[in-house]
Image 1 (tube, rainbow, N blue to C red):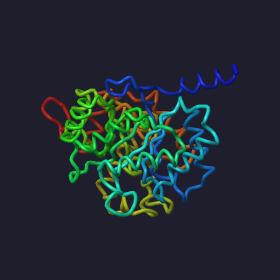
Image 2: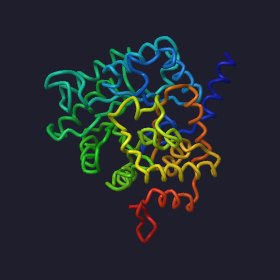
Image 3: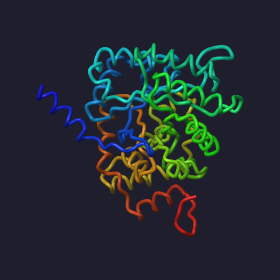
Image 4: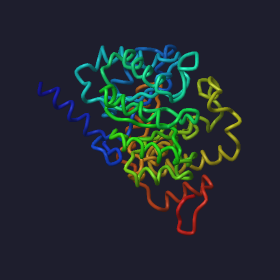
Length: 342
């Protein structure tokens, strides 16, 4: 028993944990996303190895959505199997999160933000994962056809039912985040997190005010796509590999995205990362955590070794003012006279 205790303690010594807004919840600095590589077409033994590696490194948050796959639902089903085989004794050490909001099944009730869709979705997700509850249940996207009051009341009722411990939103802009905060506080529902895209190449949450607002409102931010679909790695510096996302899946990143200007930026950032003693991917992840306004960064992985490499950012998330300015200059981010990014 003592050996198990020592192993558990060492696990948490490898990871830093950040408060989620003004709640009592803490997220690991690095969380594992199940968007890719956990569906029905992926290798199950590799999935299990990645989950074990992540957990052993202190990555105790697994982030899913009802339609992650392919096929839809298969990432949750695979996690459910892995939890049963490997993680049942550790459920209280894990943060399991899932979402609903994008298309999931045919017909008018399998998409959006209606009460009917969200209530059905949480029940389906729990069944696939063989869980009694998830730690955070997110509405996955803004739905302007459904009254926000209906969506937020559904989230609040899901939390009150015990099927989720906290509520969150994903892909919400500042206007919708402000309204969600107001509604859920009136409903006495613990709304703790907004999940948004954020990277060195994508500063939208800075430009639309979400990052600043969430800090003031006591809502955490967890960042997805921190590597800009793989562009913030050294993968494309010598061309497009046959096994890359551009070559295999054109939905999110196309060859046309790798313009000469973008490749020049990637090359310059790669050189800067080397000067910091990091890979470009490590520096890009570290950059997300450079201040206290983002509580966790979501990584994707196709093999355990990538997870181990990404953990290396924990002790290197500090940047000098000169380094931050150089990154902005490389990416041609405009500066105010005060030196703030816009």
